[in-house]
Image (cartoon, rainbow, N blue to C red; front, top):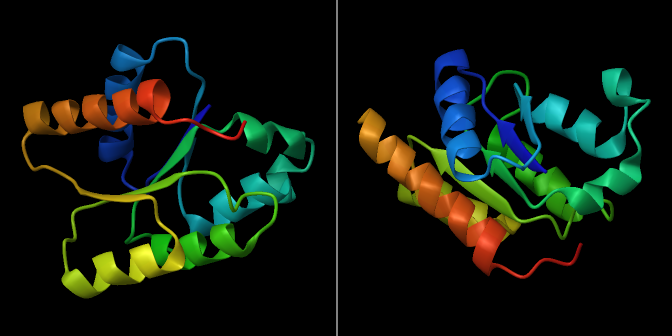
Length: 142
């Protein structure tokens, strides 16, 4: 399972479409902000019927930084402190490349930080490379 956390519908659609092209058999779950991600991980709210053991099936989380309700940085901090999710790889995928954001994300336990490309073709290439690495080359604990 791949979890995409993105508040922009347009970017989420491009991301999901790109992931489906490179990983057609992977389940892709799209969430809209950090708060929804934490509910998903902890099986709270609208995810209360979800089996939390399924967290082990999450191959990686693709997490935007700037989102409403709870930022990606705040969500990352909570994920890495949570026993249910601390080992899930988190790829920060943001239009920001501000050095303090990058440093903060790595200090909080991000596994990778990728700047979102501007052009559609470069965006697709980035998603392709991210998915190939995390799905094909990275060893996971699940």
